[in-house]
Image (cartoon, rainbow, N blue to C red; front, side, top):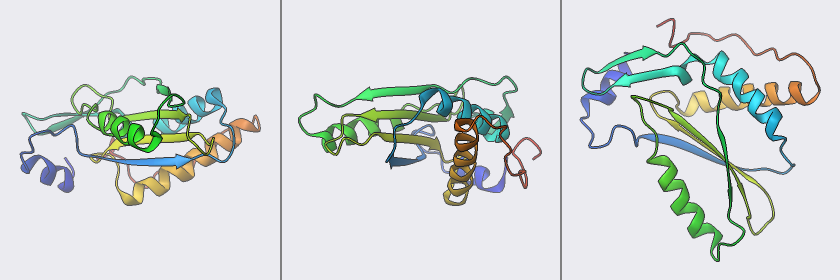
Length: 167
């Protein structure tokens, strides 16, 4: 484990799975789901932390070598009377759904039906594999991968400085 991961397991939390960060993006353009899915595969292949799993009882981590195709859920809030309240309740449910032992350590949801007609992209990632700095890296890489795939070009992501797999 990394030092910060040792700290995490030393906390003896009542729910180790519900310790995550999320980003809710308001999309100004229509998203191509197939391209987004392929761009996420690029990101998850490049950043091996998405394949890490943890044992709560033994305080250990391991690398799950098989790549799981990312699932993008689609939720429609069009019929909700109070979009903000329904969204908050939904986000809380999603945050509590991660599992550090069996995975996944992330959840991605495309949300439709906002009053402003803009789609929302909800990304929740367990804090064991993301922090404030890594969000910027992930969004930069996702933008590079998505833009390249939209143009039909090969995706070239910046090299990782250090990876969980190497650790």
